[in-house]
Image (tube, rainbow, N blue to C red):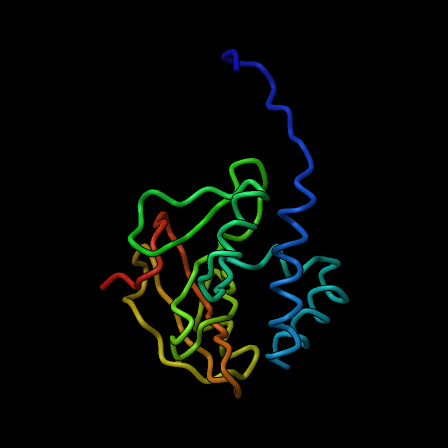
Length: 162
C-alpha cells in the first residue's frame, strides 16, 4: 500500500458473526450480561460487542481452523493463544484450556472497574494496581462462564500488571 493511500476497509462478515455467536452464547449463560446488553442497546443505542475487550473460548482444533478461515491471526506478543483480526475492529479471542475453571466468558473493557462494579452492583476482587497497563476483576456469576471487567492502558496482554 502506498504511503498516504486510503485504507480500503472490507466488511468481515464471517469474523463478526463468529464473535456475535460467541457473545450470544455467553449472554445466555450469564443473565447479568443479557441485562447489560439490553441497557447498552436502549440507553446508548449501541452494541454490546463494541464494549468487549476479548472473548474467552475453549481451545480446539475446529475453533482454530474457523479462526483461520475467518481471517484471525495469532497475537504474537503474548504467551496465551490469543487471536485478533487485522481487517476489523472486533474483540480479540483468547483460547483457554477446556478444563479451565471458566473456559468460556466475556471481558468487558471499561474506563474504571471500580465505577463499573459500583454502578451495576457487582461484587469482585480487583487484580492489578490502579493506573497500570492492564487490570481486571472477575465478577462472580453462577455457572461455568467468566465475566471479566478490564481496564487496558497500552497493554496487549491478559495478565494484571502489579
